[in-house]
Image (cartoon, rainbow, N blue to C red; front, side):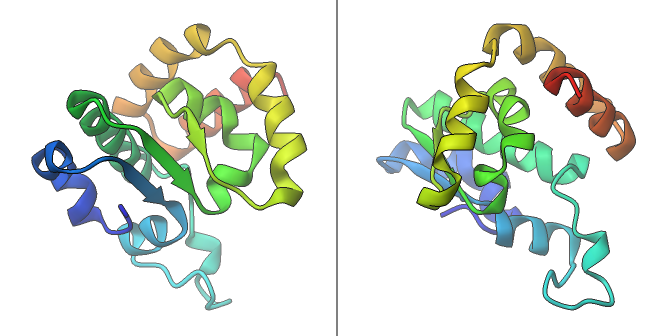
Length: 143
């Protein structure tokens, strides 16, 4: 389970010894940004679109592809249709979510043109600010 930055940064080293990787976004975001998502005084800083978070997700997906093993994602980010196209553009193909999120997420995924998003998403994540990534999300979601 990739839930801390060190695991994401080292995934390429140990992926070849594993059958799969799973990204736990709730903890990965919390530990990457040093933000307690439960603490109301700071949880507004909890940002799934922070470039550091997205880069760690990207590195984990690349490690899985390099080792030819599946990478799945669980957590709130995997359940949110707002992020579906961004995650597909990064190369995520396995989403784990609560049954209540399934229909809406399935619709978002089925209506996505993954090839259209891949180059755009990967290019912008490399050098984008949170604001630029939010604009990208608006653009690819057609909002």
